[in-house]
Length: 130
Image 1 (cartoon, one colour):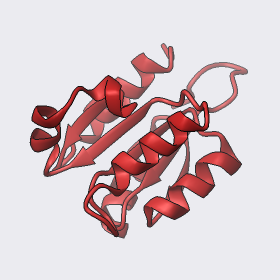
Image 2 (cartoon, rainbow, N blue to C red):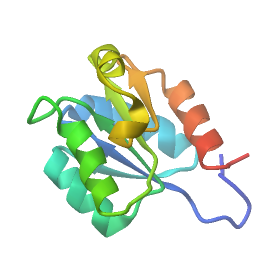
Image 3 (tube, helix red, strand yellow):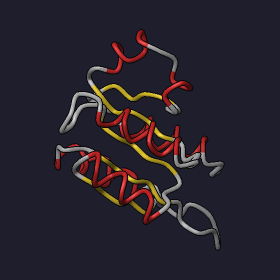
Image 4 (cartoon, rainbow, N blue to C red):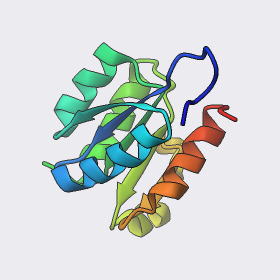
């Protein structure tokens, strides 16, 4: 499935310490026509985001630190990046109660276990892909 005739493929950056979680999302995203980059830590994800300039980022909330995903969102926002960032986490319900997504620079949250079809549909809508 191609994202669009003659259109440049949109790039999604997956940031998650769990290689199995990254592989499952990568498979679904690539099947939907996205280009996919990966990072295993928040620090690596932040560096990769600055280098690759992805169209969207999916990051686990808790990796090497309890709020590694939130830190990625905060630092990228401070650097002026407006990339849509989605948290993927089992602890997202706690995040929702703590503060608003906009304050954290987060576009939304996907609860684990993630339904890849919902992720693909959400990203296509957000990125304006028909």
